[in-house]
Length: 238
Ligand SMILES: [Zn+2]
Image (tube, rainbow, N blue to C red; front, side, top):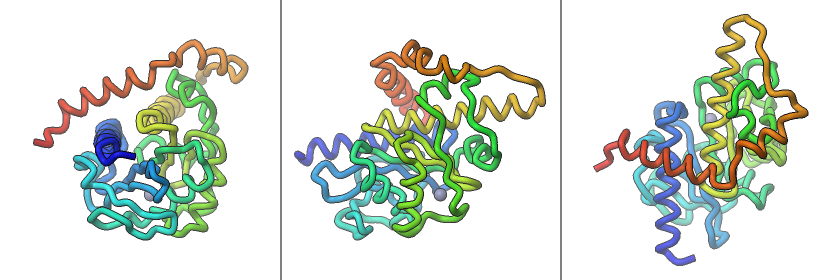
């Protein structure tokens, strides 16, 4: 891939980080997003030590190979780099992977209630999130990364018990949007659960039809452009 195209892709990936920060995924300097290297060398991972909202451009990413060895870029490596390498190893369809600790989805990971489609966001996910409960600690070894990737399976999102979430996609916008949809879906259901009142959800049998109805082919691109405009207003990086 030409250097110019990679620079453009990493600039978009930096937008993804800032959008996540803006939309409830901020947790100090924690949380990360990665892009599969277009030339197959490994994974471009957000560097450690800065918050998602502080990621500016390609200079804030480190290229590591699939064993975690740095190939390019400055800055410290997040300890949980195996999340990205092991998911990418097992899911050839995944180009972008993220891990974050959004408030509502992380709280939701601690309760044994299945996510229900109480609002549209859970429908956009295209299925219920997987669950990972082997550990509530850091995913800092390839073997734990492998277990997490196994728990994710073919899904777009996984709830990591008492820890956070992972979300994946075939491009930057799709992956980031899955992270956003999951946090919003968990927020809605937690709000309803907290009232103690009975509530309804789209029936499982209607989910596929509703998904087709509301998930227009250009939906992700339209939402992505909306969030980029908003991020430009919210983050003054100049
Ligand atoms: Zn984490």
